Length: 151
Image (cartoon, rainbow, N blue to C red; front, top):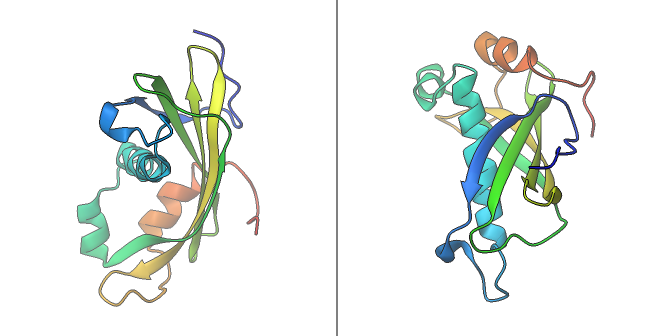
């Protein structure tokens, strides 16, 4: 395995082996599958930080996506063994959170995808923006790696 060029240090990692039902008509990983993997690695990381969907529900708060930016850099292929990485890059401890992602193929060191997702804290009961609970601010804030909020 090659040393992987992570965009930031200490990524939270989830492994993924590409399955036949994830391949599109170009014989590449379908774009919708990548978006699904971004969600999965986000929750994987959130759980590792100690927060669950039950916590979100009990607090009547959630982090809803309001913007995705995805750069597809190389195709993923059937049976590829990939690493999905994420970082909390920004947390304003009020309403906004940002994650960045990188999906790599360790066999050749290729980065297949880089992405950024911006979230806003909402009340689950109404869908309206609401201030982040202290547990969100402290949990996500302590692992945010950049200072300030990048628009």
